[in-house]
Image (cartoon, rainbow, N blue to C red):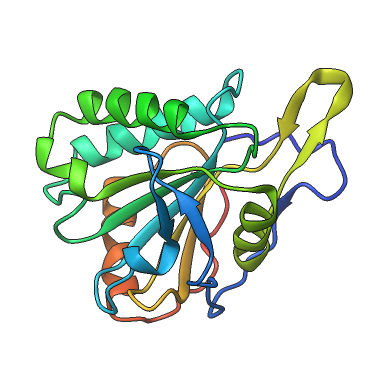
Length: 195
């Protein structure tokens, strides 16, 4: 996938082997405050991605791509792994997160996934801290009234260690499965070749 990077300070700065700060708090799609660490149980891997729900295009492509991949996999979020989708726009709240969750769970067609796919929103401070920890660099572009940002999935061990990045908007089920297995073992993968 082609990610437009005309802006300084936009892109992925891979932090393989680093950890996400598990004490950051976010709101879930019901509006409840949750520590992000509560989604990490020490063993089950977590797939993390950043979007913003009012994005004109790229983010829905990312989530469509991920959902399409998930429909092709035997594994279900909430069972072998969890997914955390974080909005990096501090102006967005639980109502948008809830709508997105409903939309993508309906597309996925696996009711069990509701317990394992978490749509979070948060304050600018917490969003920035989480984004920094995984090297996700984005910027608000005033004249376009939208964010410039990269597209990637990040895979984390059950302890919050960053083990793999898959870039772009389309994800091969086999690659996603391999990345989940790797994360479950806490093994750090090599940077994947960017297509």
